[in-house]
Structures are given as structure tokens and as C-alpha cells.
Image 1 (cartoon, one colour):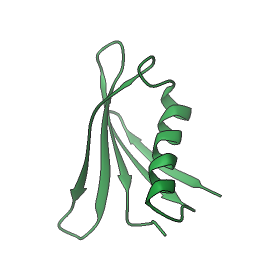
Image 2 (cartoon, one colour):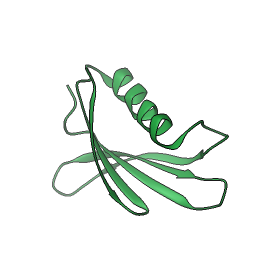
Image 3 (cartoon, one colour):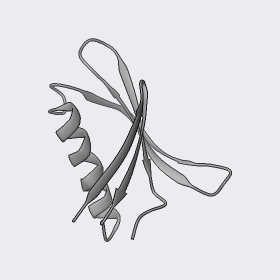
Length: 84
């Protein structure tokens, strides 16, 4: 069972995902989280960019920038260190 733990800091949100078994499940879980929280892609929000970011401490994040119809941006950091 996939479990989400998130901290919302306004524009930036950090999400940890547990219970996925591989990269495909992780990616599906990321998009499921965004859809459940923010709505339908291309209607309620659109993906602006997506990149892997590696921190100096060794952690890495899948970072998605999404934009809402009113123009505001949300930057979501999915922590990749808790996978598998």
C-alpha cells in the first residue's frame, strides 16, 4: 500500500512516498498524489517542468513545477530516498 507524507511550505511542498516497489510505481504514485490533491492535468493544473535534483547530503528529489489557471506556481519535491 502506498503511503504519502507531505509538508506544505506555501509555494514549495515536500512529499515522501512509501510502499512503492520500482521506478514505474514511484512515478505513478507521484502523479496520483498530484491529481488527488490538485485535480485534473491540463484542466486544473499543467506541468511546467520536471527534473531530478541531487542534494549535497546525497538525497535526491524528483522536482515537479506545476502551474494553476490563475498563474500561481507550486514546486513539489518528491523525496526519492525512501524508495524500494
